[in-house]
Structures are given as C-alpha cells and as structure tokens.
Image 1 (spheres, rainbow, N blue to C red):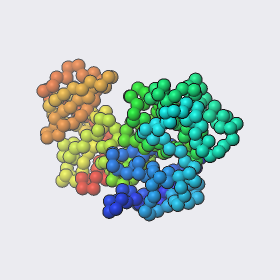
Image 2 (image 1 turned 60 degrees about the vertical axis):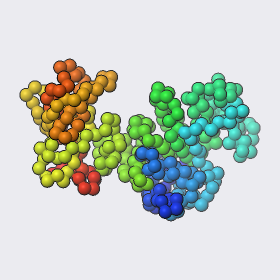
Image 3 (image 1 turned 180 degrees about the vertical axis):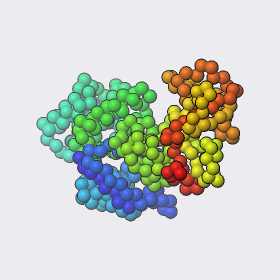
Image 4 (image 1 turned 90 degrees about the vertical axis):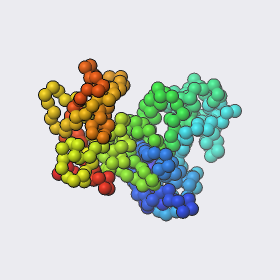
Length: 341
C-alpha cells in the first residue's frame, strides 16, 4: 500500500476549471472519502490520481515517488466503478483472475491469489458462476475481488454502492470497511452520500466547485464544520440556519446560527433555557424512534426533534430549545465558521 500526496492539482477542460490547485496528503492505509454534490470534481480528482485523466498543474506522488507522468498501469492502482464492468462470458473465477493473466503471472500464483480473494470476500461457492447468475451485491464483491487480487498500491472506488438497494448498501459498507482494515489498504472512496462517508471514512474531504472545503475526521466535519456549505451538506436532516436575531443575539445581522434538528427539542413546561425559538407547529414527521417537528418561527421553518410527539398538535404554539454549545456560528458574508462572541 502507499501514501499519496497531491500538490497544487489543477484540471481544466478548455476554459472551465474543474479542479483548482488542490493540496492533500493521504496516509498509508487510510480510508478517505471525497464527498460532495454532483459536478464538484470528486470523480475527476479520483481519475487524475489513477492516471486516467491528465492534470494541467501540480504533482501526484505515491510514497514520495512522482507519478504525474506515469500511466495507470505503472501506478499500480485498482479501480472499482459504479458499473461492475464484469465480463459476462467469464465465470467469477476468470473475472477475478483477468488482471493477473494480463500481467502474465504464473498459473500457480493466479490460482493462489484468486482463492485468497474469494475466501476474503466469501465468494468460494460462486467461482464457477457467470455474472448473470449473481445478485447485485455478489457482482460488486467480484468487482472488488478483481481489484484487490494483484495487491495494488491503492484501491480507488467511484460511487461503488449507488446501484444497490438500501439494505444491501448497508451490508456492503460493512464488507468494504472490514476488508480495508484486514488488508490495511489505502482506499479513496468517492460518494455523494454523506451517510456512507461518515460510516466508512477515517477522514472526509468535502468538495465544492473543484475546491476542498474541509478535510477532517467524520465527527469533526459533523460537529465543527469549516463553513456553512459543509454544515449544510453533512447531516440529515439538514442543519437549520437562522439569523442571529431569532436566537436573541444583537450583532446587526452579521452572524448566521446553525443548529442541527437533533439538538432542538420541545421545551419543558415553564422552561426555555439556552437558545429558545417559539413558533407555530406546522408538521410532525415520524421517522422510526425519532419524530421531527417543523415549526414556523417568524419567516423561517425550523426543524427540531423529539422521541414522543404525544400532545403536540399542528397549529399550536411550540417552543424549541437547544444548548448553546451545540450551535455553530457562521459569518453572514463569507459563510465561514466563527467562534461565538
């Protein structure tokens, strides 16, 4: 496996800048996710690291060795795409073995590596099946097996779970994380799904318009977002953003206060401690053990949460409160996070 260092990475298509002078260091054996909306440049950055896309400026190094001008084959990386891209006429065994045969590896080593990959991924009973005889999750595991069979320096994954149903995505997340930890692989994982990134990653690189907005551990990104964009993109439901005046702060509108719905709850009778927001309850949304409350506070719809909505009637006045320590404060002009005064 390898550490990866990106320095001043720029990528343009004609006059359109896709990546804008990106710097990033990825440790050997780290699982890092590139997270952001469609069009932010995360897949393009992945392809630049792999060598499938050329960069206009900057350098890419693996373990300190400059890889910028080398071909994908020479970089010794493995790619897993959204499309499984299995050969339909080949059995699972031959699909996994294909990259080794391309490298003219000896038959004995091919057999040992295929058996190892199949055992690691639980594919032993499927080795003689064709891809059309497999489920979506099984096909994805075959694609991963083909990627890891030759012990790559890094495993690069581009939206690999997006074609799977919700329950299968959860199982495959666990499989990918287990595999990465067992093999101590360097993994770069591209996704637009913030839940996937939070669950899988050692660190998350949040991207917008070709710029990395923040690189940090999942809980740091969640609790201490660098700016309003990161705060809005991480967490479901989305963070509430309110003018400071609604929360009783008099700073001439220079501050936006962000409070996550899980941190806003109905005030106990006769109490309104901390940040207090009063308005008309518009809607109660049940989501299993958590119930989300939409409250119209002035001109702003604010979302809170509670475990038991009994006695809460739409149309009634409701006060939501939050501990001030759970709030984030952002500069109204730049959107950057600031420390409260």
